[in-house]
Image 1 (cartoon, one colour):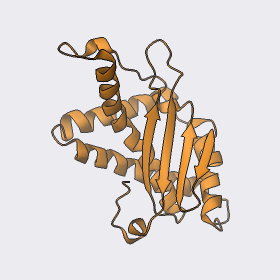
Image 2 (cartoon, rainbow, N blue to C red):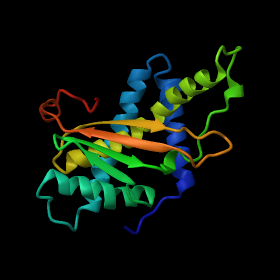
Image 3 (spheres, rainbow, N blue to C red):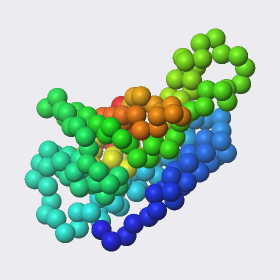
Amino acid sequence: MGREVSESCIDSLLTEMVSSYCNRFYANKPELAARRIEAIGYQVGHQLSERYTMERPRFSDHLEAIKFICKDFWSELFKKQIDNLKTNHRGTFVLQDNRFRWLARMSLDPTAEEGVPQDPAALAESKAAQAMSMYLYFPCGIIRGALSNLGIPCAVSADISNLPACEYPESYVLCVVMHACSLCSNGHCHGQL
């Protein structure tokens, strides 16, 4: 669209935002930190979808809007399309990105853990899942904000599989689950599944 931001700047901004909200502003309240990070993403997604659809006619149905998110919107943000889209035809969509760019440079060093773990693999996986979940609230908010602006109130969650180890940083999968529900359209859902 003509305006681009350095990928390293986005990585640094996301890292600092998550760090600030988790370690300073809401150090003892991770659920509030997550909610605030998601809310920032929501605003970003709402504004980006406005910009990216300026020259387009309104979408006639939900499926067209979802396809726009998977192809055009995702390409603008992550320089590639979604790898896989699945639906149950009842309002739930699963978007799969096999090489999610915003997590490409992140990994967990299990030797950095304090104390002696009983099961190092399980501890590393658990710690990694907790840390990564905070970084996923922002892109979930972006998707929720974009869809809301397109007339699809929904709840969005993310799941990450095959978190990169230090030696193989390209082996990860991000699944974004979107669910349009009546609670969302009434404002009671707050975007959480």
